[in-house]
Length: 423
Image (tube, rainbow, N blue to C red; front, side, top):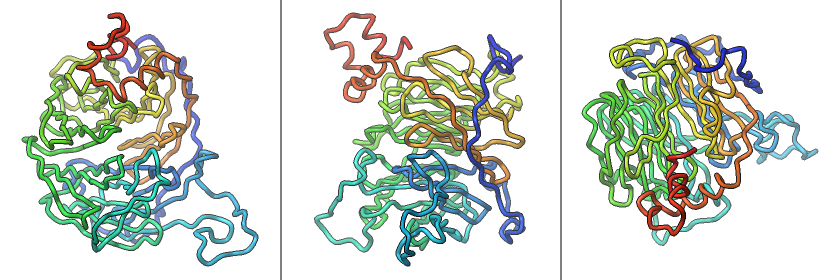
């Protein structure tokens, strides 16, 4: 079996690395004992803030560093300050924006940024009609998930602990804030549950989601916050209706544990990554399997795919344009796919150690990849220019669900295109 179907590795363009973060070997935290087995496999998340001004880096087992990111220049923000005089209230120090180091106390395996305003309008000021102890609506906050089941909420301006959420019985493997500014936080845990927390109401837990029979590895919100997907062991993917907080459907098709999921920017497609060497693109509203990204060709048989195959897919992330997807695999290759292009990736990059997580920046211009040794690499590739019909499709699908497409007075071939049955 080969990694690519129609091309050799030499025929595929190489992605350009634009930056890197490495752990400090002199850090005392590196030498402290840490049981990796408690997380059922190492898992360090990499994540950008919604406004793309910060990047959260798990730099060692118990430490998170908030690194400034320059959205305009698409790089780590180390540019000199334009202010000639130094201001003690300015986060820039000595001509550079200051790093904020958070000593988490417990081993951390997941991180997420949250905002009290919708990601599409971060400048809007929200208000609450009642008093609460904490007001998280003014600034972007950071949540960290820990191996002991606790979730901690941090001030991204000061690095100070603001709140601690306790109810999970095992490691919190994933965290995800609703993109609508409601400050609803979903946590996925190895205790086989997901929990919903309302940060606009002092972090009160409003729901425990029971469905998974085994550990839960990943969760993600749809862009309109109406759906949530959760993935875990036993080949399971559930889609939840987040207006009623109940299961919408179960997606079946993977042959091994599903460890990562990501919605397209219009919410019409859900990508799921599995240890069975595949990334499957689904219609979350009807459960149809739309497309498959193969990391081994031909596709391995079920017995091979459901075991240790040296090609486990560890992560998947959708770009903002809805055409590009990034994936990482145990073969240490980062693949950049054009869904409207060839069946093979249009770009690749290689790491010298195990890759564990990946994510596109909110603008879609950069992909961050985290490795087993707490290193983060930043890659950029030439994004495809979306066709007008694809842009029109995304605009329609942001408002029209799959079941409503058939009611549109358009040709049948166009309905298939709107439902992503054609790419």
